[in-house]
Image: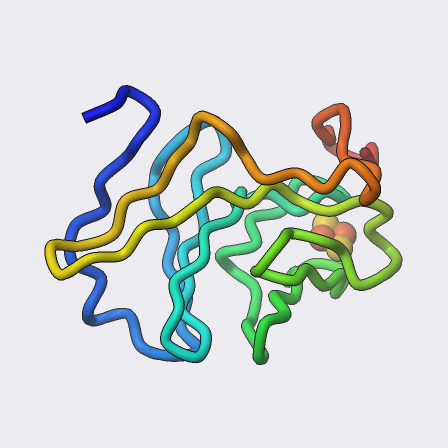
Length: 124
Ligand code: FES
């Protein structure tokens, strides 16, 4: 398997509207399921580096637990302040044998202002 492709195994127990932290990459990855489809995002709020896996999921919107910024799990775009840019998302393949995430080419919407990584008390 390609070095950038990460097998997560069977996520059949991940129910609709649920999310899970996976220890992959620098900040980990949040994996969630919405309307039967699995999505993967960087587990790091672009506002002030808070794990989004500790947030809440409502529909396609993942809400940061610290200040309430929201991110669309489909493309990582932010829903407004206090975040000013989105977060990375990763292509997901789901098959009968499980879920694979492609970490090589994060989906980034250049129009969403994605750029430098955030830092403590510093927004992107
Ligand atoms: S750290 Fe996420 S909204 Fe502030």
